[in-house]
Image (tube, rainbow, N blue to C red; front, side):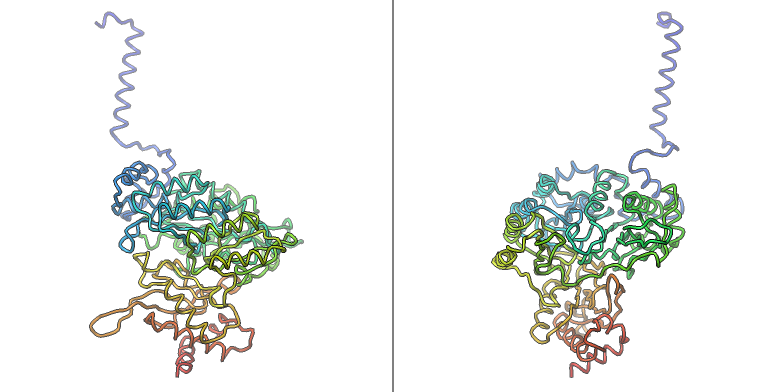
Length: 583
């Protein structure tokens, strides 16, 4: 048969056969060339960890075996069978916003992404409808100005995700090793004292993340916040990356105007607030610089020890100067720096501005802050608030990190009507100085890590203290169920972290807390220090009452804040004051 081919045809066939054999060989053995997929930078980081003698942690192995975004069809199949996930898939489905929370609840919790925490009245109504049709009929406002829906049966998981997406909202990447919901000043664009509107930056960062798969699968979760200098704190200093709006004064060799000051490494559960880097960021460059920071973290973050896989530990190991040098290498240019004297003083926060009516920058308009009970509202309450926002406001619902929400754009002539309609829903627009800053995580009714029923105990503490003493200044009390610190107990004036408290020599325990004091944020930023251990939940209201009485009796002046008072005394002195008050 060979005689039937010309010499040119023979050369072609030989070349084809040679190419075929080479292709087979290339598929049979790993290539030494760098992979080019969006996941390549993560595989390379894993490979370096292994080459350095480490063993990948379980979550890294799960991501390497099957990327969660590639496994969606299996989630659909599980949903059709009403089948709960195995542990590996429970981790994967968090990339889609679903958390299976057994054994506390045999169901999913769905967490959203809402950039800057702002959504429309019709989106809010749609979420309430989804909570009724596929969840438990209620929503939780989180400490990242976000929403969660609970009690979703496995058979409803995909319907919930699709329902959220149909509303023009998102769940993708809201859990596991991803960049979480991008927070911003809740009064962005309407605040009389703000330096800059954070909404465009939060949305730009949000869509940058969603449209670049290489930014998924980080060594661990990552938080980014934009503070615009408004009256309500966004707690940007608790984030891995904090962009803080500042104004550069004239005459320091820099263009006068508004920039972001860059702070890095906040993780309050590990006792660290974000630290100022000395870098200032032209606002137009914020997303680009955040991207470079993320890619350095992808390269350098720990893929072996899950407990040390956050940005803080990269900064501890490399130092800020070396880390910023790596960021500059990613950017291909130096970062901009400014001396402290070039930065004008920032406007302060108002710790009560998220509750009640407050004037906006636009004449004759106000926002109204609704005091939710520790972040929970029923679907009927949500629909009612959405209707008020539509009828009386500008149509927006603005979530805050204080587990409540604002209705904006209400004309002065209709403020009283708005207040009356909110109260008719059974909700409040007023709160005591204790309840205004009362924050609690989900607790052990919905989280397997929590050691205590934080929301119930928070309500009991506030009720007990309100009935017995009159507090004349805002005091934040944060209750978190475990060391993950979702309620950020270390930045509260008083922080409580759940613990099992021994009650006898037989080893029996009850729900309780360890107490810290002296935390703060913003200008008073600090990590609280330990004060009391093993306080039974039933004793916590009385202990806090005694501490508050000691403060009122012994503060240096009426203007001395609770944080300043507790920092002026060491732990032993505070314990003595509590004991004296209890006698």
